[in-house]
Amino acid sequence: MVTNVESDILILGTGGAGLRAAIEAMACGDSVVAVSKAPAGMNNATVVSGGGFRVAVRGLTPEEHLRDTIIVGKRVNNRRLVEVLAREGGEKVLELKRFGVEMTVGPGSISVGSHPSLMGLGLTKPMVNYARSQGVKFFENIIVTKLLVDGGAVVGAVGYDAHNDQPIIFSSKAIVLATGGAAALYKRTDCPLRTTGDGYSLAYEVGAHLRDMEFVQFYPTALAEPRIPPYLLGGSIIEKGRIINSLGEDIPMKHGVTARPFVEKSRDLLSRAMMIEVLEGRGVDDAVIIDATEVFSHIIEESFFATTTYAFFRDKLKAAEKPFRIAPICHFSMGGIITDEEGYTGIPGLYAAGEVVGGVHGANRQSGNALTDIIVYGAHAGAAASRYAKTRNHVRVESTIEDELRRYERLRSYDEKEAIDPQVVMTKLRETMWSKAGIVRDEDSLKEAIAAIVELNSAVTRLGASSGRMMMEVLEAPMAIKVAEMICQSALERTESRGAHYRTDYPVEDEDWLRAVVIRRDADGMMQISTEPI
Image (tube, rainbow, N blue to C red; front, side, top):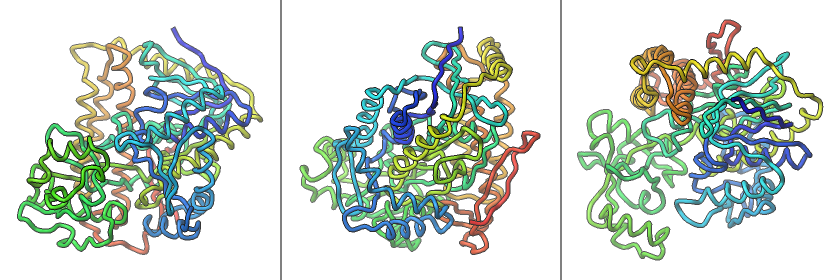
């Protein structure tokens, strides 16, 4: 059985960007369907975020926000996109109050959510509720694997409903990709494991161009204790504690990392310094040490995040008595689809917003800009998709649909004796990306990563699924492998170090590299790499 769904606008992704696009398109009078691999508003980067926005309010001017974003991005940002972000950020984020989002406004910042581990839920939950109240239809637990094209324009999508264990076809006049980044391609990540870069692959396959895929941000200070979630650490723990290697050397001091707060101004440099210590044998179980005993011994319980968080560090980690392990963790993808200020990808009918888009953040993202980005450009993409949809009629492309449906059938009728578990493939991919294409790279490691990716790609033909849930994993794998190749090929092309991209064989920033590395698919289906001036 195959389900058919028709709408004016199809939104892929229900994080902040997708929800904001859906709300905007609905307000323009369109019928809107929003699709996600998880329950609406859940299991995405927005919901696990800290709920903080960097915006031009209360003393921070748009000009200052623009300047800071480009400085942090190492000057390879798309300036036009940053100008819109800085100019509209305050207004667009404050507008979220209309959708039921509660917020606290401070100097240059806005925060949502009331509990440290659920801050992002303070954004997605009210937005999902508001979108439902306005008539947005949500389709959950679905992976989209192919965009449908007619006459060069995107006219729908085909995917698999993991819950009902059957294919599903979406017919639409316009599509907004809001599928997030690809941080879950790395062994250590604070993003949900479904964050594997589907949107990059989907856009690439229909001819969209991508940029900056080599720029992957790592958050430097995440817990790395066995059998404990990799919580992100900041504030007084990091600023007043001592980050040291196995020899007791102060790592920031040793590597000249001075810009504070570390997790806001030195994410790339501190992550790099810590990983160099690990790779050169001065780590502890692939991590380094932080001695925050003095910090915790003087902390007043009521002032430390929340009593449950304090109790965790006091009782579980014994942080007031002994040091504990921390290590960098993959956090954000700066690269992505090339769009204009309205989210248009250059492919008629296809728009994009949020982390799936490249150019806003350049080589390194400023803290707080991710959530501002998804709200500003979610609204833009939703409105632009609506304008386009009003000029179109529905089209159905039977032959393309049938090709994909036959692929699904082959995956379900697999040979158990010959099949490879998709989790084995993804584990190998994540380990490869972490060790060969992570924080510290060079030509040899990147070529080794690409060779491993080619080998994994050959294994895709032996994947098979015995259930709907397993089908999602099987269908995710080839798209993830393609995105991993994009990251590695782009990193190999950029022969310098800039922002989050660090190569030991080209360790300095090169003025000649004020360019974007651009990826596209040629007529023969081969990946092409080029560079373009900023």
